[in-house]
Image (cartoon, rainbow, N blue to C red):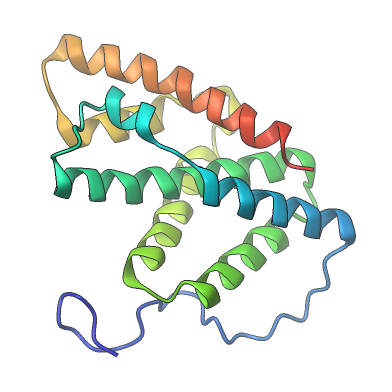
Length: 172
């Protein structure tokens, strides 16, 4: 298989989609997984792109930021799992990553899952108490003036909290 950047190999290298799933999820866990899959499919990042100053005609920036925002969405779900399913969160997250990778074998999807793990690494130490590190990271892609960055950062912090609450409320 050839990547878009003309390298060969599988598009998704971190979790083999063919890996056997010896874990049996309870009905509640499966429902939470299916609910997130539906939420993720319906996610619209128009507001976030606007806060970041990414316009409709900025195709490369838009594509890059959509990968970042989708990864963040996955990480926010993982954060909600940690609160609702503390013992099963890792299993559920790994199951989602494996199932998503099996259904979406393109390079962009693989990058989304990688970004999801990276954003989870940023969110895990702070929990749901502070989203400012993630917001600062997102605004760092398109640094404007200091005042504009602070404004975008604050808007993103509040909006990320809203997204997290939206995901958490629809977990089950």
